[in-house]
Length: 192
Image (cartoon, rainbow, N blue to C red):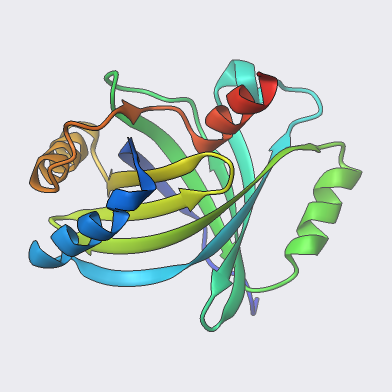
């Protein structure tokens, strides 16, 4: 079927580091000096949904429809994220993604008709780099600030080792990290 991509099931191990926005450029330079390769830069517009019969805040799941805006245009990714597992300080969870290149509004309409409720809209400017067997995301999230995510995919302990090594190489250990998702941070901020 044209316009649709195969679903992918992954174990994603990541750490999210809260940084002052002013240091993103120096982190970008450090990525270059370590041989990281620039992959992409653009905007991601995420809409998170609540299931009509299951409370995702209790089950620690997330259902997200993402519009990816950049060259050569927009595409969409539907993502289910399972409950977090693993050690404190590093977030690991099963993730299932389905990519497609058009009609994100149609899928959103179907969810609404099925009783799913949008709970948050999160917009971020993101740059992605890869190297040292990890991906690094430099994010400016509207209303939340700036973050560096370091992510590896695969078996938990090996992926965690790769993430920890990259954080040390990027000299990010002195900054605060969080295992909270952007959705959790957004909901916390808006409850206050």
